[in-house]
Amino acid sequence: MRGVPRILLVLTLLVLLGWVLLAALVPSGHEAVGAGRAGFLGESEQSTGAINLVSAIYLAFRAYDTMGEAIVLMLAVAGVSFFAGSGAGGRK
Image (cartoon, rainbow, N blue to C red; front, side):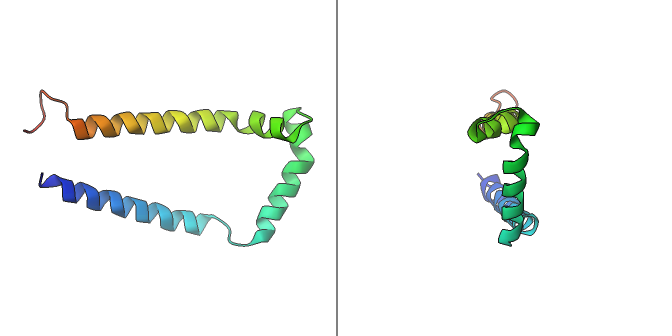
């Protein structure tokens, strides 16, 4: 039980670090969003082959979505196994 506050502290620090990095990497101006949107609207049919914009987004980002889901599932399994303990070699 003594390790739980340490784990919570590490997780809190990791979340804060991720928040700071995300804030530093995401552009704050609306010009970048508008330029990206215009570029995607203009090139979606040529790059994906889909006429419908929704289909183009689905085709372009499906691999990223599947990879993200797999990462989330692996992290969930790792978290459950970490907190549940291995049973044989874990501390009591």
